[in-house]
Picture 1 (tube, rainbow, N blue to C red):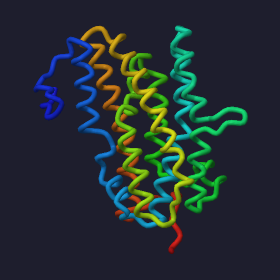
Picture 2 (picture 1 turned 90 degrees about the horizontal axis):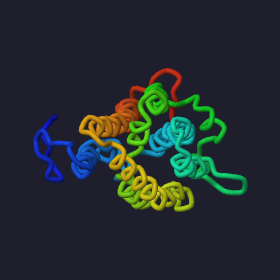
Picture 3 (picture 1 turned 60 degrees about the vertical axis):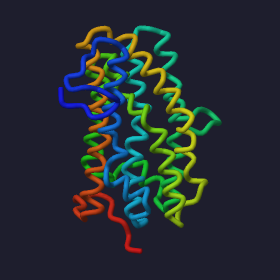
Length: 254
């Protein structure tokens, strides 16, 4: 295991107890979560133009709209009824229900507020190839790996609230083309993400009973941080460095 530099996790940290596991998970978040990515620094600091923000929101929609699909797959992995009941509210959080708004609708409010056609956004025709590959790999991961790893891969939610707070404040401060009404997705996740993260953390601490199982949990979180990170790599390459691949969304000149 590589050297650890935070949360007092030593080199070759043991994974002998649930506390060891939580310490290493939090270290992974502190060193690998996509809040550290240069694209987010540009986004939250007001350094992007409207077209670049559009490209981010468009590509991120594919991830957001795939989350309830991922969660339906997670539910299908469990014979345990109590786990299925606990997990299924996540689908409603994103899909909504009859007469109630979900996270996908809130994200479409953001993309529409940015001037993107909703049908185009929902079609996913303009997203980057790396976005599709990364998000699809996440769905395949929860389908193909153990149920424990499937739940562990959601633990990036431990670190999401701070990012959402930074995003709300930074984007409203720096972009005159964004108004508070289109930021409701992030405001709602400030309540939802901690609830979901606490359940998942408790679950893995209870059900990963050996060092080998705890390592699987850590590896699942690393995989998920890579899924998030590579999407921003692709956005940076395409829309900051200017290498938009064929068929991908091209912002209109201001």
